[in-house]
Image (cartoon, rainbow, N blue to C red; front, side):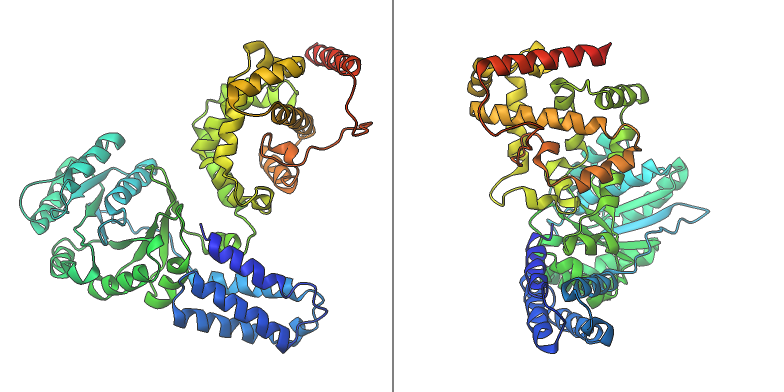
Length: 488
């Protein structure tokens, strides 16, 4: 998400760092680089120019000119302007007291509109609402069946009939009233191009059903086309908000930075994956922080809270006790892979952690690296996973052969895993949120990400020379004694 604009802004801000003071000359070069980064991210031309004008006007203030760190000052101004560009956002949905609340979703084909209907239904269901999905897209083949499948997955009713979209929507309201359903989500028809969208049909549904909210669903990866489409739909229907989909893809960010300024319609939700639970509220402050490379710790904490809610209290306490007591085994570490996937995966976690993206080489895929570690663990015996200190050179060679890695990679992973266990013991007195913050600040050391290729830290007394077989045997014996002592 926003990799292109992040890199462009980072390079632009680097030009200003290290300057003794901010002058019009060096500021002009920096702002030109920022403008180029915005345009390359497919930000609207007028929006980019106006953005640079506002940043330039603020940066020319005397307080900034006297600054000893111009790069930091400009970064702060850019952050404030990004927040203003994308916000403010009111996430509230107006629910009517008597009768069902109607939400109408519209957009082009291929934007993920039908799937977004399901995501929105799941979000509202989790808030205690009783939603009804309405299959009003009778133009796209299999659209009705797709919505029915989603409804079955969520255990949410789906209304459909073989008439016309306006009749379907009108009858769906009557059905919801009879069944006591309090939210109706209309999945309306779209086309491959905005010029072919049946706007008259959408206007008629709007007049007949009178939805409380009309949301435009658009693909973030389409850039300026998304902005133009949003503008056309807003002129026809008077939109209440925008839902950006496919934000987990290779989105340049132009749509997110341009839509609000061009249409004056706020982005309310973003889709961050194909699964039905991948719908998030859009927070301009968090997005601006990620764009300038400062991560999104608040969003990461929310993701972990959702995952924690799915784990039983007994299992959670058991894992935490083992972790903080230093008894965390490779089997326990293996189980955390499932949690990472539920929380969005390693790639998503790294993007949200400030500075962590710098520790992974650009040509490396963190998910592939994680699978390599998983292969190492799967190639170990049950006893080796429980007591990794018994893994000597012959065992490392066998594990490497079974996982398609090198024996020195297995050795590095085991060393990092041991360092991580020692680090975790130091977190015993901290709350789980403080633990995340501590991990964030320590993220640059590879010891906290076993197998992620970070530098292996030397332990006290390490000379950097290879130990003899007798010394290594003595070390293993000492570790076994320490482990028995910890276990009592």
